[in-house]
Length: 330
Image 1 (tube, rainbow, N blue to C red):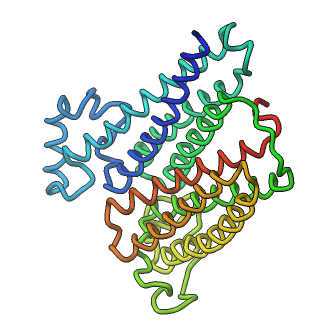
Image 2: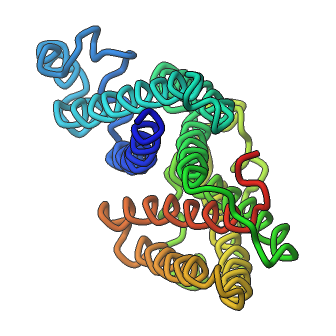
Image 3: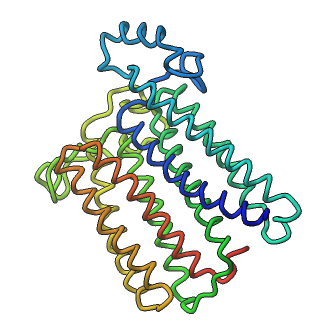
């Protein structure tokens, strides 16, 4: 009974983690990250409703709801915090169950323990995201932390189905490399989003009518700086935003070609064929969504879908790596 409950809680939590990641993207894309400028509450209150007076005062001070504070943005931000807090409690429960005698006898509890440590660090990043006023490196790390949580929860969920013995050991390092490349591309995507560089290039396939437009990589990829500024405090140039956007595009080409090749190779292995098709379909959808971001001028639904697609593609690569692992319980 304990094992059955443990397994189902893990499955639910893995799906719930995906929801939290997508809602986090929605909050970021609706500029609601500072909807409540303190943490963990909203102006020291438990809900935006209780903080209505403070929110109204902040709206008046910024001259209307066009700024970072509004009642709607406050609810978006707090809704994500409520979901993230629930996820933390679920992972805490998983860790506790993993260390109990009945479950511990079948699986190592250290992955669940690592997940709890990661979620605690994620909470700290969530706090710093607000208190450090959306500093790009912090927001990007927060995004990557969410993706890492999803990847580890997926691996933990897959582990419940038993050990995977692969017939294609030669493909293991290539699948691992595919996962690394995808994570790097997600990081680049996060850097684009947190620096508001998604529309730095509005034409396709060129950027400003050129294959290699004028770019400022030095300032664009300075990590320790404030939002919209260089490390010296000057305004971040359009050339720097172009460099960020262009690099993500270039990375997308490399990752797309590599993952397409990887999916093709995996499709030649009978027990990996379904996974390979999934990777291929998700990859095609992700490319289409990325292009649609430009063509639609960063439509909110498309942009959120692009983030969700990245998360699903990450899950698919984790599933592929699990299927290729000899000791999935290690």
